Length: 205
Image (cartoon, rainbow, N blue to C red; front, top):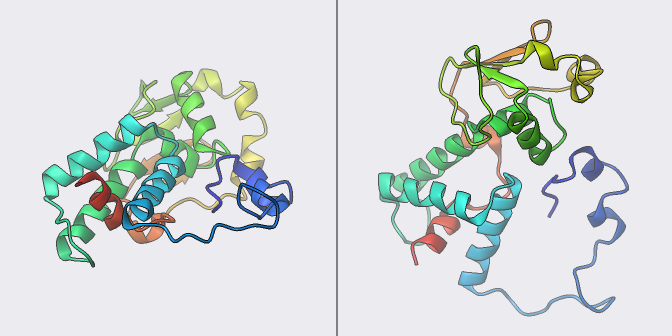
């Protein structure tokens, strides 16, 4: 499954999955053994963790905090609690500063977005923030630091941003290179490529 870890490369013929669609192992052979429930849950956890470019420790901390707060049940099928917990988890992950920088189109991958934040190129409500996991809130304003506009990382950025489509929960002013959180991100719009209840089941074992 494509996780777009290499940004635009994943949309081109150079993508590893396009060049070699067969799974690892001897050529021409595919895995025949079915995954166990544990294996499926582990796979879902790994995919979402890699999707947001997080370490195991970071991701586990997010999931466990949601489990404690929402008391998400460990059971088959969806319930109101698991749906609320799934939405809460995605909100936390989407509102990370590095993810918002990526969603705004300032980077082609979340890894690159993390580097831009760590190097101090962004302001939050007028103050410099170098913490990639900084959690943004409603009405927070994110802007490129004036001294960073002429940096190599932002050269010709306006040309790229004209083609970029921002999430509906963020407004963006291309002239000021400033954005604002106007709504909370939704699970539907984020569209993570996983079944989140399976991830809760994994961490509840």
